[in-house]
Amino acid sequence: MATVTVTTENIDQLIADSKILILDFWADWCGPCRQFAPTFEAASEAHPDVVFGKVDTMDQQALAQAFGVQGIPNLTVFKEQIGIFQQAGALPPPAFEELISQVKDLDMDEVRKKIAEHQAEQGEAK
Image (cartoon, rainbow, N blue to C red; front, side):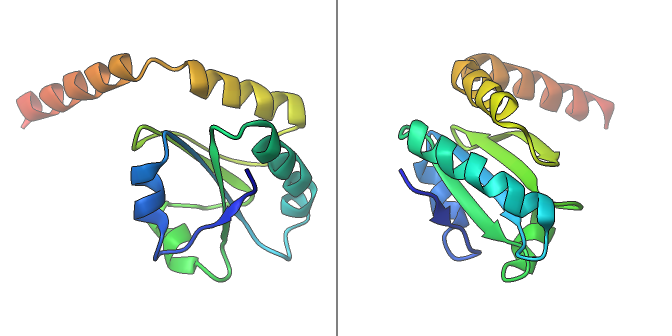
């Protein structure tokens, strides 16, 4: 699957419809972004079960701000509508493949359980 262009208009639908969504926040002027682009594109072809989205931070400044993007390139990952990873910096291909593998293997029932426990703890603290 090729990468999709992500905007404020389609982000919510992409998160809702994608079992796994990997976002690459980038800009034309960013050298590391240009270096990472082929790695991101190759992964999108190798993993048709994952949605790979590109967010142009110059065109989609409000979206980058909403996600708290401070540096680019920036990878943000959702699995089953839950944000599970965010990191600035380009990953070399083997590290990016390892990240994708870990995301695929992540037990979301366990993640939801930990979120519920955390929310309960926060409720008790108030």
